[in-house]
Each structure stands twice: as C-alpha cells, then as structure tokens.
Image 1 (cartoon, rainbow, N blue to C red):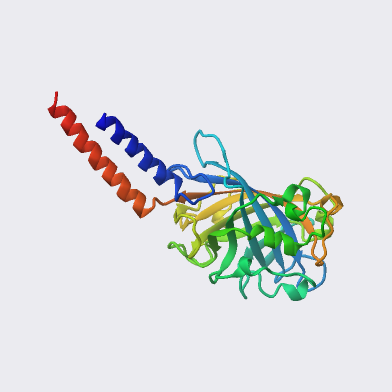
Image 2 (image 1 turned 180 degrees about the vertical axis):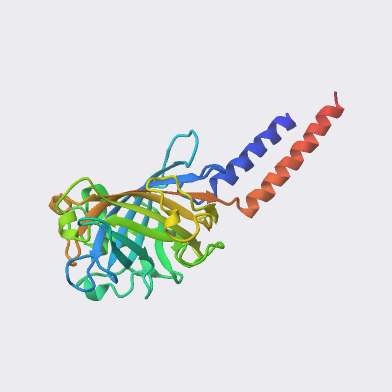
Length: 328
C-alpha cells in the first residue's frame, strides 16, 4: 500500500513539474514544449501621419490565448482556465524593406522609449491604463496577463465585452487585456545567452492599413523569437534553439539560428474587413485594421519546490521498494 501511495506521489510531482505553478492559467506540457494558440487584433499608430506603415511607426496588438497543446508529438489541446489569458504587443517598426509588388518585409523591435510610450500624441483621446505599463522592464515588446473574467471578444472586434452596447476603443481593449495578474514580460534584450538582435519579429505584408482593412484572407506572414524578462507570476522558461519549424521558417533571418531563445513562433495576419461594421464605435481615433492568428511555444523550467518534492517522492519510492523487497 505504501509503495502504491508513493508511486502516486511521484506521478504528482512529475505532473507539477510539467504543469508549472499552481497559479498558472495555461496548461504546460513536457520536455518537448508547450504551444500556445492565440488571436490578435492589430491597431496602427501612425507617427508620421502619412497613412502608411513606416520606420518609427507602431502596431499595437491585443492578444487572447484560447488553448495550449504539446509543441510536438501527440496530445490534445487544453482550454485556458481561469477564464482568460490575454496580452499586449507594442511593435515598433525598425526597418522596412521592399519584398515585391505592394509587399514589404517589416522588422519590428521594442519601443525605444518604453512599452506603449509616446503613443498618445499620435492617437487623440487614447488612454493607456497604468496596469498595462507598470513595471515593464527595458526592452519589453509584449506582456501577458492571467485574467479573472472572460471579457474579451476579438472575433467581434470589440475587445471588451463588459462594455457591450457602449462605446469601444483601443483604450478599452488595453484595459481589458491588462485587467488581470501579470504573467510574463517578453523582451528584446538578448537575455538567456542570445546576443541582442538575434531575437526578432518580422512580418511580410502590405504597408497600407486602409487597404488591409478592406480585405479578408491572409495578408501577412509573421515570424518571431523573443526572450523572457524579469517580473510576472508565470514560470521561468528554458532556452530553446531558434530553429522553429512553424512556417515560415524565420530564425535564420537574424544571426545564427542555433542561438537560444525563450519564445518562438509564427502565424498569419488576416485582413480586417468587417471589423468596423460590428456595431463597435471606436472613440479614441484608432480603429483595428487587421486580425492575427499566431502560435508560439515555450519550454518550461521546473520550479525549485517541485524538484525538491520530486526528490522526496523518489527517495520515498526507493525506501518503500527496499522494504517491499525485504519482506518477501
């Protein structure tokens, strides 16, 4: 009986090691990694006022993550609980390179003046909630939150369903995305041994948000690799080789693809047709112009307490096994 009980303890300890902390909203999987499935809503901050996405402009993306699943091998997806896992990306255009008729390769980085900073003058009426920016480390390009209520609806384009029937804005989207417990800071600073600049966010797409807003279907193909910054309640993640097999393969674009990164993935950007005809009225001068469907993956590091529990369970397992053998 003791042997059976301790075996269950080993399984529990292993499960905790694979699942992260008890407060983590997402379900994490084993050594092969965990893939996150998310949707995005993109907003354009036109800093030079010419209506085109140029160097120095920003795209602010609102994220909702629906589920996680094993990054490789068999396994079913698990819906995010508690109700919501959300995020914000502040993508600052570093370079813009022609890539064919009407297409450009955009290279994004962290906002050089700080996460979501210097945005309000270019978007009259926009309000940045304090929770979205408080304590963001230098180089932050994205932040995620473990949300207490399910109040986001990116498919409808209104971000915050708690404001159903009321005026909607990027301000309310930012509020809805950051109204939980800070989970991860995602940075662009060369942490985890990767040289600064090896992490990246690139998108091949049109530079005209007005045109993108009028179409459906895929209009862009992002690829990204980031590092984990300090802060948040989410588990530490282990470095992984930046050789993502998620199409398009993009890690070789910057530096050596064998350098480690903490978050990697890719996805698609879809046109935003219909986003402004869903009944939502954007009141701060910034309408969404595109949707996104991204996937990213991480390798979670076991918590020290979990490792200690696992060690105790294994030690107990050995004692029980020896006792069982001596009683035979």
